[in-house]
Image (cartoon, rainbow, N blue to C red; front, top):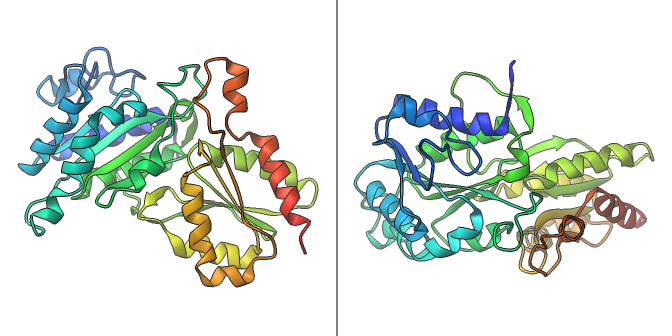
Amino acid sequence: MREITYLEAVREAMSQEMRQNEDVFILGEDIGVYGGAFGVTRGMIEEFGPERVRNTPISEAAIAGGAVGAALTGMRPILELQFSDFITIAMDQMVNQAAKLRYMNGGIGSVPMVLRTPAGSGTGAAAQHSQSLEAWMAHIPGLKVIQPSTAYDAKGLLKAAIDDDNPVIFYEHKLLYKTKGDVPEEQYSIPIGKADVKRKGTDVTIVATSIMVHKALEAAAELEKEGVDVEIVDPRTLVPLDEETIIESVKKTGRLIVVHEAVKRGGFGGEIASMIAESEAFDYLDAPIKRLGGLSIPIPYNPTLEKAAIPQVPDIIGAVKEIVRYK
């Protein structure tokens, strides 16, 4: 199987869908000739033209509002926000319109739209361009929330998101764009709401999201040298959440660590921890549940401080060693 980057996988998923379905189009700031803030849409305007690769004014509220209106009339828009932080400007359209209109109309009509946006830190983009706000979006009934960690998952989940009749928030971590993986050329779809066990193990379960999946895999490789066998579960989608896969993993290992880049306070890790506490897996726990998340500070510009603000591989190793002491 060929190997391509995460960025190329996202672009390929959109291009294949646009070739297949004329109702699919993309809109956003600088996505045309410039190719988007991170180059994801580069070359697409040459193939599909300015009507289907639509440059917009610098107004996230207008972009989201236009997408909601287009979706209501039967189109399948994909809007790109240059940074996930800017979703705050589009909150009324996403939270009060896109998420609720199908429900408020008794199921008549739908809002099939995808909001794609780069998230996370690590690029020196500072406090207003480096946040991880997925737990905020997951709190809103009516929105689906996806966080792919690999190129393969990104392509398959984006196709599923475009085909879905509900609004989907699709988070792409900036540092994952250049990572590579095996990705089929043909179209394929990964079910929304199905987790993936990235590494099987017996001693402790790590539930990690987005880029933290890669950090957890690196930590697991180091811990294996010391005889600790780590299982890593990637939810891939926060809403809907594959509770069954996580529960079964915790029942097997008896220990749980949840790792995400977002601020720990109010982060999605608390949702996973409480889900386990309320399930039959609670009786299988041999140690307290542990959460790792970002510090409760704005992301610093300084690269050393930026790195210190979120969990790193040594933090994950230390957390695992702490809870495997419990017998």
